[in-house]
Length: 155
View 1 (tube, rainbow, N blue to C red):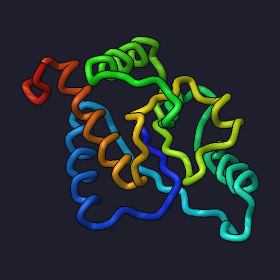
View 2: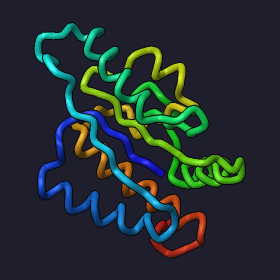
View 3: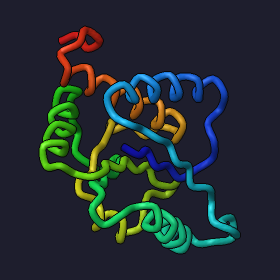
View 4: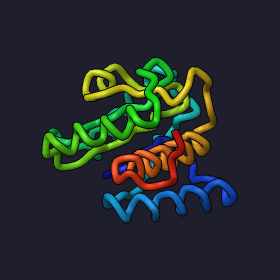
């Protein structure tokens, strides 16, 4: 499992939570974070050019048989048990690797949208990237505990 995110490193107070939940996830799945920094000259690029440049880097980090879950505000809203079911379905398909992608500040290029196997929205609200990383890590940990029928998630 890979968490791929475009953007700057997390602030210390948020990073501690991300590390904690990632360590918890590692009891169930091997999980790693990869941050993709801004392309050179990003400040002078148009929104479309920036998304294309980010897409090029993202696609270099994804294999053709990876299951790509794109996080996007226009994606499907899922409950925590539904996230657990999605993870179980993907695991049942013997997928080599699940990649969760948090795109750049302007979203992602159409090439990434087309490549995604599933598009997931955490909320109708828009959050800063570092909080999305924390929420994502917590929700994946929660899904793992639901799948194992552990006490973390209360229905």
